[in-house]
Length: 116
Length: 113
Image 1 (cartoon, each protein chain N blue to C red):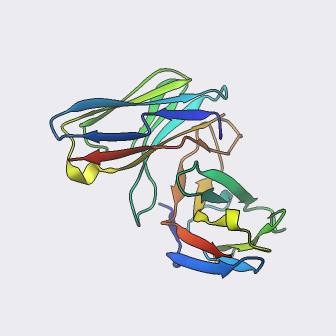
Image 2: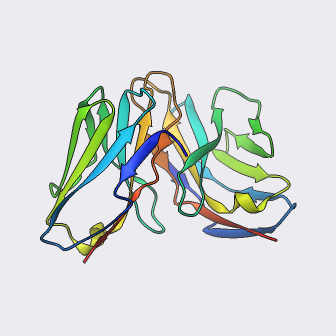
């Protein structure tokens, strides 16, 4: 079974600064996907960024980038130029290579507060 | 907002009540999911329906009864709940196959008194 661990329950960052959220996972699979999902207060959870395990290049989406260390089973999210709208719960998630429907394993989340 | 809606958004029910949660997706997806989100715990997958067929039941107590009449609608029927069932219940959908992104609804905040 897969497990996902987020060791930072809460974090804060000054607006315009950079913050890194940590995530580690455990799996015996060789090919899989990793995700960061964002859940703003009282709003729907949305996908921020995803990484395929067989790709060595770290994924980037605008101000969001990941540091994927496959051997260490580490998948951190870096948010650059933090904005007030980045205030949310962030969930790291794991999915085996898809076939049919997808079963996703989530971490406990990190609550990020962006301070003006 | 995404194309997944959930009603009601908030629900307070007594332990002897019977209620239902509804989820509807307007994305043409083939798979739908129920998750339970409790504070300081990972999202717990409850049920998965793929092309209207239940493909996953994560040892959920029988007081939760899912129903998927078609690929666009998913219900969660509730009866004789316990206070520890109070949580945010999230619905999600995916296209299926190699499409991997899950689209979530806003959730139903359930309080069992």
